[in-house]
Image 1 (cartoon, rainbow, N blue to C red):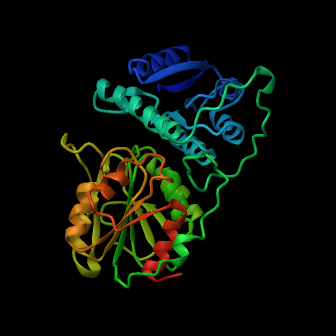
Image 2 (cartoon, rainbow, N blue to C red):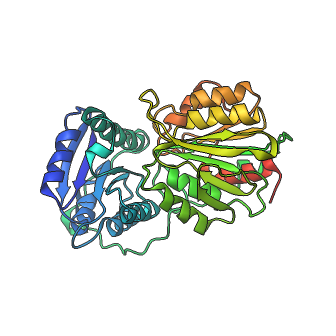
Length: 376
């Protein structure tokens, strides 16, 4: 079954370009267009697409407000297109808070090294988030014009991505509350993620106590223009400190270091003098910058088995090779479970390789972390 897509943008050129790219893939069908956010809300209600691609800046009703209304009335996977500017980054993060699942730069030359890679990335993202919905739920019948949504735009910030798109779900008090800590001692926590990661990281980090006793490394696939705004947003929401990693940062307890977009993050030094090395990577061999594999491998070398690593939602398999090195050193690996992953690719790669010791719902990760580390 083809993934049915609604394309929303006020530029006729961009609507046509996105539609042409998507329909090159036989597993994708563009079923409609909208030229502003208000029309997007109406078309989402009438057509019930599997995925919506959404511009941020539009007349009549902007993309963020449209996301809020759609998620309130007809929860649907939404992929935002954003400019790579400070304002664009802030607006895109607002859209993710409102319920959008992922984003891509609006300039295709910013998406990948060449045009063919950019096309494949867009097609694959649309299929991944669309098929996850299709695999679990039958598509509702299109609404009649008389039932067009009149939902209010007031909607709380998203705290838990869920494949059912029931965004009002609350953290579980089930399995995590009954699982005991292993008793293992750690010195650092490392978390890797991609598609769906911004909301997942916010869900976890906002639940950690201010006295969290170890440094935390965060590796999120994200453009360079976005990581400063994302780190600042997390820092304002969390009890722990969150910062974009910088060259020479000393690893401190209770501080989370977000790998800068377009760069790699490594650990240097020994004992209490460990610092971060942050550098631009021109290697064509490594696809992701930052790369979970690169940081995980460096963490394995620096801390051996005293690492608790978590692989969250994301496309592809970045993190699997690094997790293997951590596992060989004696570290503990956890993976997000399939049900709460926006895209199960990264955690599935780790779990299928037999590297993870637990598959955990997103709502339980923070509780498990606090119990396993022994704080809070």
